Length: 383
Image 1 (cartoon, helix red, strand yellow):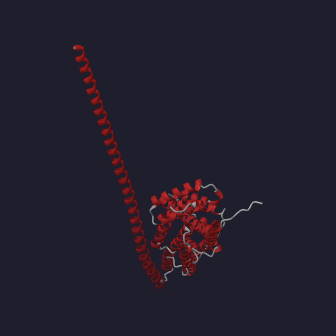
Image 2 (tube, helix red, strand yellow):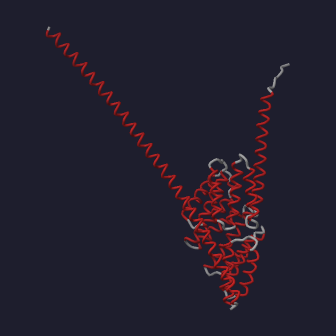
Image 3 (cartoon, rainbow, N blue to C red):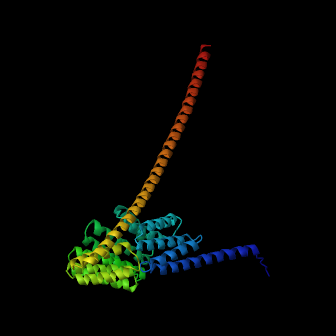
């Protein structure tokens, strides 16, 4: 019988390696579960999501993907609150770690998010740049069934940009393409984006003077938001319906819808949403000659408008600072390349000069040697 002697230290090492791998896999799975569950509450309870994201970051340890997801979760929640200063702060933290990750889907998600943020800051060329990068990764991803959500987002954000830059016909086409992709996913986060897309389609139909289709899309937006209990999105849909009512002269109906929207918005503290509601209420109270209520909501509208402009200026300033840093980095890299090229060229030139100097010296020696031989032969002949 052959006896096999097992080295106990080797056994302990292998066991530790397997245990570490198992623990890492378990932590990643737990992180994904928490991340996915928290993602469903971004629009209904953003403050809770921020705390969950912070917890993920603090407990992620060496798990880079988990840490990126934590930062992205916080970033998404601040986007929901329209706090672009904080949104950029946490997006930059996530982006800074992205080079250490091999997770292609995570890279797509962050690139899409960058496109979304730059769209919201109205820096459209930068937004399209990131959306194009994300789309390239999406098209190259081997499992196409896994990218419906990201492709849907990509199309819808393009719809936002084309709506503002070109026209609503182009935008509606991209909204429909995005919604079609997201309906293949049927998750809570997907329905929140569908609600946003339907709301923007409604706004497009208002611009196209088709009130009936506008109302239909706002109602569909409301239903999609209600399915996931997204209070702010329900409020936006009600505000959209109120806008159509105002255009049609149904001021009392508009006031009712706006008050419903205000009740929902109080739970999420969305500055842009509240601004639009206050503006709508002041206009409709003015139209119905309710002067005191008009004054109250017009003042609220002006006050919140100042807060939003201040926040946007700060965010745009930070965004421009980041762009300046990127340009400086590019300039430094290009300058380094030029210096390296010049140094390499200079060294190459020196080597060529030395080579030819040595060659010329050798040739001169050969010439001198040949002359010496000729002279020697001539002397011999004379003798």
